[in-house]
Length: 158
Length: 176
Image (cartoon, rainbow over all chains, first blue to last red):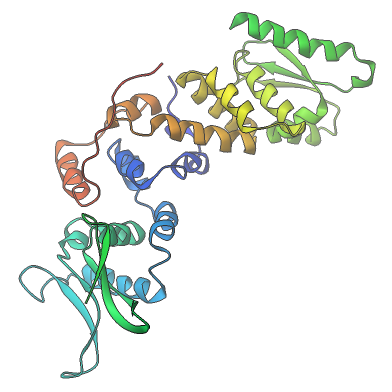
């Protein structure tokens, strides 16, 4: 029996590109090669755009980049006990919260910081990441931090 | 299945007697069966076409050692439909219904070898559909892959995946 892994990578990618996020996660468990392959940004960027593209913009990518960089430098999660981390602009008392990551062990312990798109996808999916967005309240638009709550399939803003 | 192949071969050899098709291309399968096809069909197969081009069309017999006489008629059938512009959802559904998992895989490898973009795209979707909602063990069997994780790696991976989805209950049944 021939193995599909003997295929050139571009051909194997044709199959992997057809898989849903859920299927990609299952493929991760198949073997070491696919574990590394199925985390790639190339595969996850599309899913991120499909699922989150309408609510996240450049600012969110930028914020995520910041969190990931901090995680790589190893100074993430030292801010408080539960390992949460916010990014701020301004000087106290006029601090402005840009984004907030709940329990950043997600990106630290699992080395997901090397997998930008996939880690962002699941941080959003599991509501760990409060990201900047504009929220409409009646006719008034204001900037807020928003997260997704997967249990109720709604967004929360603060 | 054997009957189907021979009827395919009959219909293909008819074109051989057609006087307008003096330039037919002979594709020789790995098990030495000759399939005569129109040059337009060969064009669909990039690997074959580039072989013809390289020899300025002087060589019209092309050995395809990696492809069996069982798989080649399917490839030819798909290419024929493709150049006739008759690839419909219905045709694809019928086409794939005839194929078991191993055949899908072999055709995918053949399409890769022959470099037939449309067939590759189509079969990659078929394979994706066939491994959807299946267990990791099933996917390993389908792909022909051994589990090469150490127990430590496996434990770590499970921890990582706890962050992804919950409540996934895959199916371990082999269908073919």
